[in-house]
Each structure stands twice: as C-alpha cells, then as structure tokens.
Amino acid sequence: MHAMLKTTEIEARLLTREPLMLFFSLAFPTILLTVLALVPALSEPAEDMGGVRFIDHFAPSVVVLTLALVALQGVPNVLAGYREQGVLRRLSVTPASPALILFAQLGLNFAMATISTMLVMAVGRLAFDIPLPHHMAGFALAFVVGIIALFGVGLIIAAVAPTTRAAGGMATVAYLLVIFFGGVMLPRFLLPDTITRLGAYAPPGVQALADAWTGSAPPQASHLLIMAGIAVLSAAVAARLFRWE
Amino acid sequence: MAIVEVKDLVKRYDGRAVVDGVSFSVEEGEIFAILGPNGAGKTTTVEIIEGLRAPDGGTVSVTGLDPQRDGGRLRQRLGAQLQASRLPAKLKVREALELYSSFYPDPADADHLLEQLGLSAQRNTVFEKLSGGQQQRLSIALALIGRPEVAVLDELTTGLDPQARRATWDLIERIRDTGVTILLVTHFMDEAERLSDRLAILDGGRVVALDTPGGLVARVDTEQRIRFKPSAPFDDRLLTTLPHVTALSHRDGQVLVRGNGDVLHEVTSALALNRIIAHDLRIEQATLDEAFVSLTGRPLDS
Image (cartoon, rainbow over all chains, first blue to last red; front, side):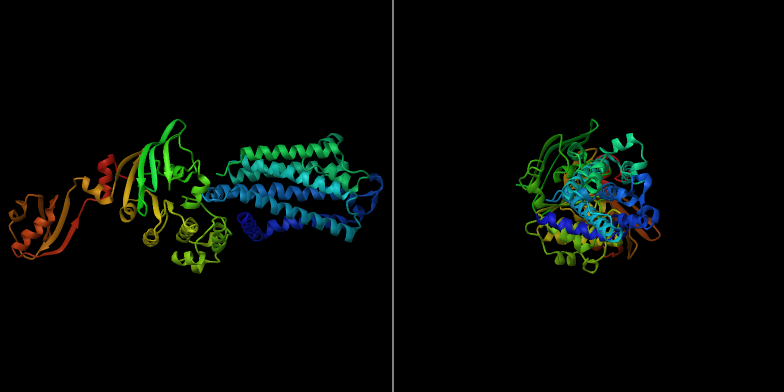
C-alpha cells in the first residue's frame, strides 16, 4: 500500500515536469470550447440544428477529446517509453511489481480527465450558459465506463507495440479514429447516419455522454452495457498481452 | 551451505541452449565473478538467479529460496543492478531512492547510502543530467537500499572512463566489507582479476573454469619474463644454467630472462651471490588473459 502511494506520488511529480502534456490534458479541451463559443454563430441557436446551439451540441464531443487525450496519448506513450528504457524491468527485480506504475498512471490520468471535464463544464456553464448535464448520474456512469474502455484500448496498444515510436504511431491512429467517431473533427450532426450509429459503440461512447448531457432521457442501457463489455474485454486482453520488457 | 547454489542450469532460446549445464556456488560474503565474452550466457544465468527468467532445466537456490517459487520473498533479500536499465529521465536521485525505499520493510538510510556512493551532491539532480558513472552509482544504490544479503551487479563499468572504473571497484570492495555477498557479471578481465575472490569463466553457455583468479593463472603454465639492468656485466651462463630459466637475451643494456616456476627466486639469488644488483627490475607474469586463452582457445575480446 505504502509502495502504491509512493509510486503514485512520484509519477505525479514526474507528470508536473512535463508541462506540455499537463497543459494539453487539463486546459486544451476547455480552451477549444472557449474558442468555439466565442464565435457568435456557434453560440446562437441555429435553424438547421433545430434551434439548438452548436456549442451545446458539441460539448459532449469535447469530453470525448479529453478522454482520448489521456487514454490514447498520455498513458500508452509513458508506459511504452518506460518499458523501452528498462524502467519496468528494473522494478521486476524489486519486491514491488511494475503493475504499480501502471495503476499509478491510470489513476493519475483518470484524475486529470475528471478535472479537465469539470473545468469544461464549469467554464461552459459560467461563461457560455451551457447547462450542466441533465442526468449527472448517467453522465458519470458513461464517463467511467467510457474512460475504462479507452484505457483498455490504450493499454493494448502499449502492450503490442514493439517500440515507443510504434506505440506512438498506433496510438495516434486510434486517437484520430476515436475523435472522428466522437464528433470532434466533424460535429456529429454532420456525420452520416451509419457513422453516428457505429460511433455510439466506439469507445468512449459519445452517444451515451450526449444523451446524459443534453438529451431528454438518460443514456440507453444498451449503450452503457456494451461499453462496459468493451471495457472489461479490452482490460482483460491488455492484461494478457502486456509485457514488462 | 553456500548462499547461492546453481546446479546444471539450462536455458534455451529458439532451440539453442544459451545456458548449457552451468553449475557453481557462491559463498556468503565473497565477491564471485562470472566472466566471459558477450553471448556466453552470463546475463541469462544471473537473470534466472534473480527470478526474471525461468530455467528450462537445473536448480537454483538463493539464500535457500527458489527464485521462481519464492520470488516475492527472494526479492526482499536480493538487490540487482541490471545491465542497460534506465530510470525516468526527469526523476531526481533522492526521489528514486524514496521510491525504492518504499518497497522494503527495513530499508537502509538513503542519505547515508548516497554519501557512501558519492552522490550526496546530486540529491536533486534529475536522472538524465547525471554522468554515466553517477547513473551507475545510483543504480548500485537502488540495488542496496533494501539491505540485501546478495547483490547482483551486471556489467558494472561498461562505458565508464578508467578513473570511474577504479572508483567503482573501490566501492564494490567497501560494499563487500559490509557483509553483502556480491555476484558480479563482467566481460572485463581486469575487473574480474581485481575484484573477485573466486570466479567462473563462462563460454558458450558452459562453465569452462571455476577457481580463484590466482588459481586459474597458476594452472596455466606460461612463462615469466624478468627484465633488469645489471650493475655489472656477467657471464650469461650464470643464469642460463639455472633450472627454471628457459632463455636469456640482451638489448640496449637490458637483460631479459624467460623462465617458469621459481625462476625469479633463482635469478635474484644467483645475482645476489655474485654481488650484482638488478636495477629497474621488471617482472611480467601470466595474466588471466593468458589463462583464458589457454582454457578456451581464443582471447576474451574476440
């Protein structure tokens, strides 16, 4: 336990020494939302969107961006880098397990994603009247299940990539796919129907997040259950495949 | 009982036996070196001892524990410094020690350890800013922070300048003096010769020789070469008739005597009896290098 806390503390300190990564994970999603919200056309109700404001429609996608940043750019790169340098292997000859670093990274990144999302919500609410999620509990559930699924994907990439460079490349591809399906590149209402339907099941599950935030009903149980299944499956596969060296 | 016992160890990769029936034991409190060229199976052998790899055959016992079955308990008593293993670039020296300290129930005092290793001034330096020698010393510190009974050091001085190497050797001897048993893996002849109480020479996955450095050298019947400048001329036959002298030559006023066994004693006695002083006396003896060639048929560096 002591070792787990110490590892998390040290990993947190190391995180603060990478200001660029910290900035991206914590501030960028909020900055993106702010920049968009400052465009008049996007913060006024739009006729072709059924009277909804663009930034209200887009907010859940900002959450997808946040989750993708930590799970697919943060964690895999750090772990693959550690593995390549022999950091994880060095731990294998101590009483502690290299898994401590893995859990520390996941915990810290989960915390960063949560803080970042709360920042998005706070700024959105206070500065641009974007309402807080209608179904907070459903949102939290979708958030947790979605991030675990994404972590699983990120860990599988870190597990199978032979080098740090390969991990970075594969992770970036996954990242781009996730934010595409998440409606970050092109807003969801502009995506073809098939993509939107597929996107509901792509981690982290933008549809569930959107339903909970701006929808009139809580997220669909099927969406949540399938995402939970993906989360469990990807975590199991990652655990099976991951090597410490 | 020996603190480390290895019997008939076998490890195969792709059907090839990288470790092919290795046996040796290490006594408590000694420095035991495993010497051999690259690819001899040295690192694989110690990785099995550390519990990082599972053997395909044979048995290993470290402080009475099996590295595979009792890995958790063993890792509390064994410290290892791994070849080419780095730490996170921005990790500070004292943070590394804090972290590793937290893994053990009764760790050594980190500041004291840093002092012993000459790293006190680098407490707040990040890993990537340390010199090669400092990084090695930090790695040794991390291997020792848990107060291990056995420390495994793999390729300790590779890439270090001569001064750093000698400083590291002094350090290892001081550590041994505190009662830690040291298992040293090296491909440097001088390192094995200088540090080890006993050593095993590994070649092609097999133990080619197992002895003290002196014992190995003595096994090899190579000649000794004695050079000196005599204070007065003398008849060559004064020395060439000695039983252990095999050859004598002159060059630029210097005499070179080749011989074996007790030749040195015989030569100096003969010279003394005839009141000849041997100035600038130099003796070259068989070295571990020559012993290695003799035992394996090729030089260590090939």
